[in-house]
Image 1 (tube, rainbow, N blue to C red):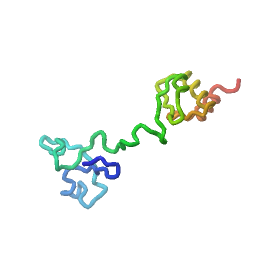
Image 2: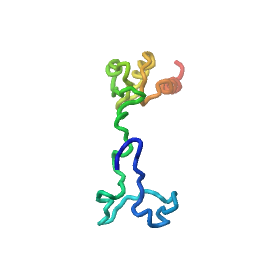
Image 3: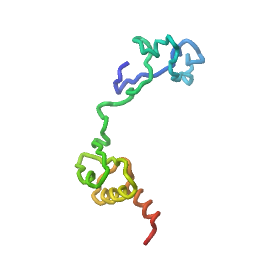
Image 4: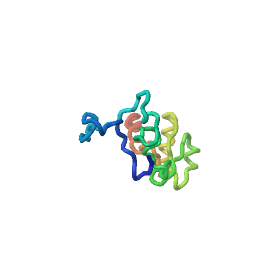
Length: 133
């Protein structure tokens, strides 16, 4: 079946149209079950049979990799964050707490958007944890 973003296949159980208990005239019963018979044509992904769930269905290839029209850039240190351009958004990599604090402060000062970190919430949590000095 085509993976057009407008028309995605509805994945249904094999022979759902034959039995009421599998979904004939009963929408709620129309559920996906993986085909696992020895001679099952759906399991073999033969032409002319219903589509089988697999990786790749439901992805819109045009917008892949962009968030809010901005390209995500992996950031692991301050130098990476300083290199970010106007049409890019920071995505924090695998970093420790100390580096995350530095990056959050710099991002807040320079108004850089971070995809997987709410900077204001993170800073408030830190202040609350450390308390007034």
